[in-house]
Each structure stands twice: as C-alpha cells, then as structure tokens.
Length: 220
Image (cartoon, rainbow, N blue to C red; front, side, top):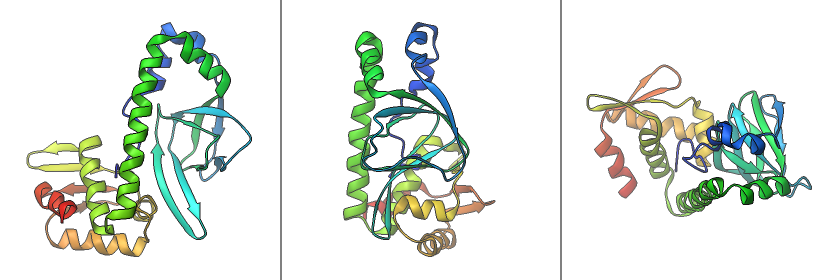
C-alpha cells in the first residue's frame, strides 16, 4: 500500500504547465482550501476534475465509524468530484478545477495528453487493486510493512545500507491510511524499532535499517 498512495506516478500538472498545453491549462480555475476542508463528498452533483497544485488531499471511503483511505493526492495528481469517495485536505491546498466535459474535450483534442491519461488510468486501477488486497487479505503488521517498503521505493533516500524516509505523516495519519488505530500503529512501530528493523529520527523521519526483514513481514 503506497505511502503516497498516489493514483499515478505521472505528474499531469508538469505536462499542463508546458507551453504546448496552454489552451488546456486555461480551462482550469484556481481554488484554495484550508486544512481539513472537504473538496467533494460522495455522489456530489458537481461533475468536475481537479488537479492538486500544492498541498495534500486524502481520498477515502467511509462506512459507519470506519474510514478507508484510497489515496493521498499530491502536486500533479488528478481526481474527480463525481465519485463515491470523500476528498479532504490534509494541509492548506491549492487545486485547479475544470468541468469534466471541458476536460474531456481537451483530452480528445491533444493526442499527446491522451496517452498520459491512459497510463494514469492504468496506475489508478493497479493502485486500487493493491489497496483492496491489503485491506481484505493482509493483517495490519503486513500492511504497515508494505506501506514502508513502498515509501522507500517512492521517496526514500539511500544512505549506505539504510533508507531514510521523510514521510511527512504523523502516527495517527499513518493509522488512517492503513485503516487501523493510532495505538495499533504505535505498538507495531515500536516492535520494529526494538527489533532493529527501523530507527526513529524526529517526529516524521524513519530510517529503515533492515529492508530484507521488512519485506519478509509482508510475505509472512
């Protein structure tokens, strides 16, 4: 389960900001949201797409008292307001919003952009299946290990045999992503610290000392 849990590894905003896509970029309007604000609610009547320009947005499903995080959107990630998911800001956020119909017209007009969208949709499907698999079939300790391994691949910095992770997430935020409690994540992290698999540095930095052992947890 990815630490970024991004829907795509392709940054659409970077593509749109290039001169050749100026007409496409101009269909968007910029909007600012404060931390913990909702951008969209399930089955919203608004049919728009939005691109994250700065900050982070959590995409999640909710059922009774449970929440299941599907993605954490970062700069360049795209999503729709017309889904069954909640989208809520984790920070102060700036997004670019466009009507879905206008967005579709522009995608059809620019073949170069169409190929990017195909890859984005492929990533979306792959990521969704990974999330469902993790929530349904894996225990919490396996999901946490997979979360950290994916973090290392996505944004880790290699320092000798160690991998340094600047997660930018508090323990309670990691718990929300994994669909569990803060107490459970704290206990599991402490076990990994005691085993020498991880080392803690500050509030949001983790050092993976034994990647092989972490991967073994996923397989067990």
